[in-house]
Length: 246
Image (tube, rainbow, N blue to C red; front, side, top):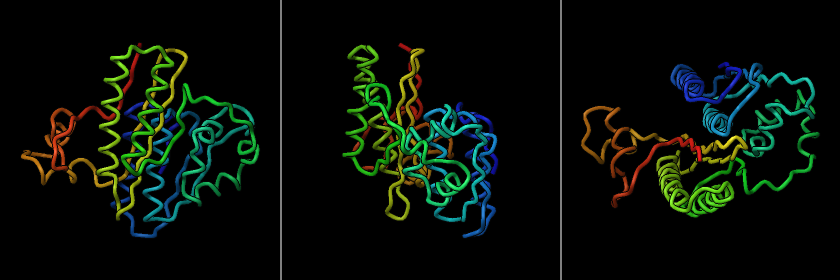
């Protein structure tokens, strides 16, 4: 599996997810997979969160051999520095973290001073309960308000993201273990990145026995645009990725 130079937009992330799915279906349990990140030089919150979520999922089934990104100086601003700031190495599989530590002087990054950026950044956080979703919502609202977003827009975005967070916790379960992660970053240019990722059974398997649908695409459509839910009560739905420009 080879990551592209960037994990930013939906096309690059779809390509990565397709590689993950192909490996999962073609390899045997406990086979070894080489995760080649050598060309990776830029990730967004969504890219970083997706990478973490997929590696945590694959690690449950295979042995991971990681080729780390090529960086000239670990103390310089680079993709590894950003991944560390986003708490990637606190949450990633142990074998992946050790690959980085064996190749790079990660102690430089681990020991650096972190400035409080709670008004513009929520690092990748594990979300495993409705209470965790409430914490996510509080953090998101703080970041939105600090950006000067109107109160009604804050409320609308909060409602959408909270619903998505609850959905991810709901269908992000694998053998009774929830693997759902979220992150938020506000950019000076006016753009915001909000990521919610899980590696559970997925929308189709979660919903198909609870709704009337004619194919998998229709299941996804109903999950996004209607009140379709695998829970007993109806709940609002919304899109998985948000990009907001004030």
